Amino acid sequence: MVSAFDPRTAIRTAIGYERYVNGVDRSTVSVSDDRDDTVYIPLLLPHEVHTGDVPEMPYVEMKLMNVPSYTENIGGDVHFTEAYIDFDIVFTDQDHITPSTFGANVTSEILDKVMENRHSITNCIFAEVVNDGREIYERISGYPIVFHRLLELKCIFRQKKT
Image 1 (cartoon, rainbow, N blue to C red):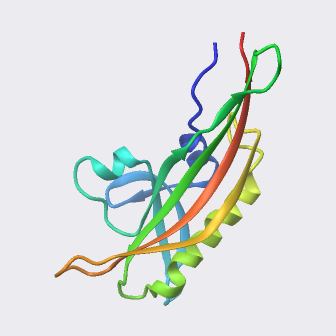
Image 2 (image 1 turned 180 degrees about the vertical axis):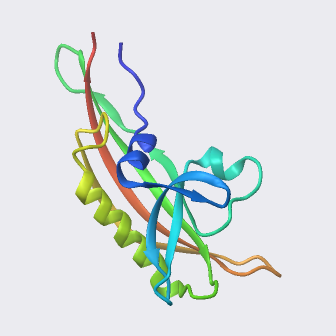
């Protein structure tokens, strides 16, 4: 049986550290703020962000963006898949967080963790960061600007039909 490929939970397990954040046990990455205090940033899946209360910022939303796949051999029994995941780093201009550097610092931490653990992500042959520099800004009247720094990860998976 061939199965669909969604490596987000495996990636979160491989690169994150378990930490109690805002009353919930979460897988996190950490960086230092402007005072050198540690900020723990939860790695969340979209259903954890968009159901119930909006999570406290900062957080990282791991979005499955594209999963191109094809049959790899002429016999048709080997399925090759690449999964592209956007790490959307969401934050505001809070005390001790400078927007111009915070997103880049979180991106660097995730990049470092992916490079350290690229071969230990369950069901993923190989993982690499393919884009680490896209920024988006949301401005809603009466609210602080919400900053987004996007990092894109590609995971490769190969499976044989049994």
